[in-house]
Length: 221
Length: 110
Image 1 (cartoon, rainbow over the protein chains, first blue to last red):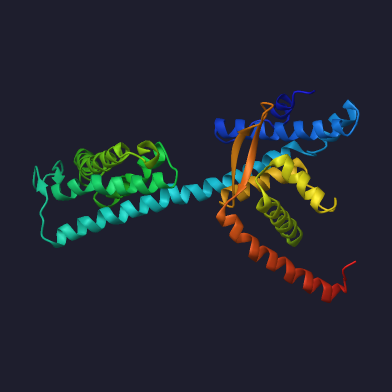
Image 2 (cartoon, rainbow over the protein chains, first blue to last red):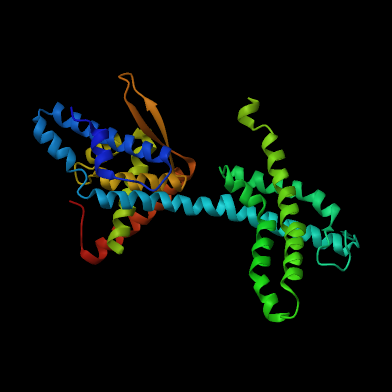
């Protein structure tokens, strides 16, 4: 009997999906071809005709590869929404809603060097709430079967979004305030990145780590 | 476009209907459809698997690897509750379509 797995590997070429998923697809297609071949042989069809008829199951391997990738990428798009964007938006809005409420309640930030660009601004109660918000984001992301970087991305979106925003508006400072030296602008950017991106991201990721310590129902049983 | 959607709709209903009776692996699905339709419908490998993966992504089916007594591994597809729910509206759509075609094209049952 022909080696149908080798045949599929040879014809299908590279599938731009995970290695494990690609192996499963190949094995499944090879199993189908094998069953088809064995069925034809059982009907008394000669070996050469059975091989030919089985190969006729796929008229264009290129088209099949494209169709499989389209079907798999449909899942990728669906997963991206449920694993990244929904949990990410929940953490984003929760984090800034909590910050706004704390400011409305009159809670003041601790500032290390008031009035200086290198000042470190620390909203301690907000920072303490971030691990919980990060854990909620991680829970939602993992519930949608996410793992690895996707969970951290979803949970730390509030910090990442601000980081991107700061980097995008930084060049504007040169247009709006051309007389302020670069050193001062650079120091202010670095301080903002520490205050609003690095420290919050650390707190949110701490929530991800704490959430992963929680036993899953499968682990408990 | 209509042709493609029509073909996909036929295929989805056929797959869901055979899996409603029992879980089957890919080759068995195509064989059962050919058998039950008296050979009128047949699926090649190239037509079947992209559709199975799409239906699996939608949560209609779940494929699980099984090893038979002779040591062969096959991915067996089970109908999930969401897929079972799809059967009734799909059947109703097809019934409507047949009724409409019968009126327009004067097609009658043999």
